Image (cartoon, rainbow, N blue to C red):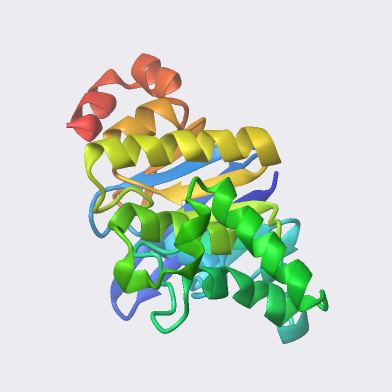
Length: 240
């Protein structure tokens, strides 16, 4: 398994968010973290990418327990994944090209001309016109910002792509285009995708498997077909 959570307990003061959460994500999957508002799905994603630590339990990413790494080990591991935050998190004073070039400049010793060519390749890979490279975030639509953020997340050829509500704020057509892009990138790159989402179309048409978090625990883990067979009432309630 490329990600494995073992008995995760998360507390914020007296508030318990996770109470013994365990699940696994296979290499090459598109995997969803689902649940109602306040269920802790984004918290789980943040724990995977080492922005938060669980109160107890173990979280393995690429066979490393991310709760017990040295600073050097953390830095090395971060280079093996890419993250697209909910609103793109682009640097407003940098162009799209400069945003995508940034991780390549920071973490590689490649010559500048090669970094630029790689960044342009990633921009085109996510379906943006090459002319977009010279634009600034304020000049982009919501969908273009998501794609630019995705290009930056792919800059270092990560093994895992973490997405936080990737279609949030997009119109239905743009959401479906983004879904198609994720499926294409998985096919093209063989990448593992882990996403937080509440988009019903994404859940039905993109995810291979998912977990549903309810009452601080895993209410379900599996595929949509498995959910429909094993717990149709939960599926109906959740999809509504």
